[in-house]
Image (cartoon, rainbow, N blue to C red; front, side):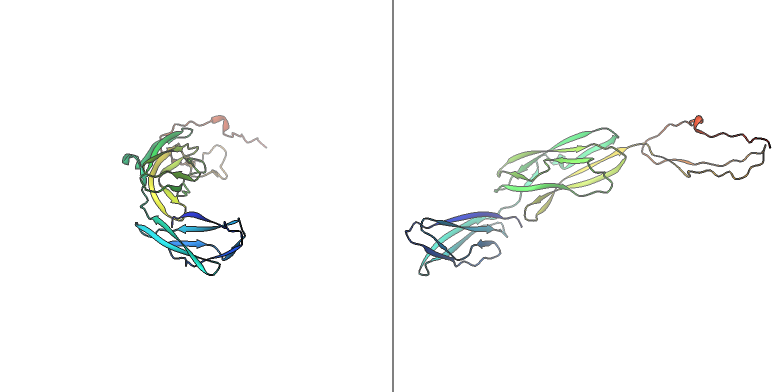
Length: 247
């Protein structure tokens, strides 16, 4: 759950030490981090409040502090739960299609995001791991944690596809992962890398024993497992030719 922290500073302006104890019990949406303590004269202590909004609404809580075991001081803590509204500016950009590239080509696309939430949002952009994509082929920038200001701030995200080998067609969702565990799909990346793929059905051709002057034939099957047509020619100088010597 996404949360926000704030710190209350309690200062002892008296000439004597005072003791302070927070009487508030933490609940699912407001957590107080403090312990009973003694504040020396002229010193201060900090109380941390963590806000975990469970609903889209305004919250208000009164936190009571007991001072020197006799008097009380009340502090009102308020906040508002708001909807997460980070999205792609242009709906057509929800699908980033690189098409079919070839080995060595590089293509970059820009996706603009907007934060229409009432609060700043900190998040990471994460693409799901894909075994079909070699490491470093697909990159998203910024790659570090991002914080977008509220009420209409924009951010340009660069998506780069630079294949170094054949990549079958893929379709990957890019997720917005907020600090706290919220995960929301933002846009989809699609593409492929076409290349020639030539395979032989065997690496060895056993002729066995052949009578001199006779002929033996074996079949070699060649497959094009790639995405595009391919031309080829035999390198005859690579074939081994031998002639048996008479006894």
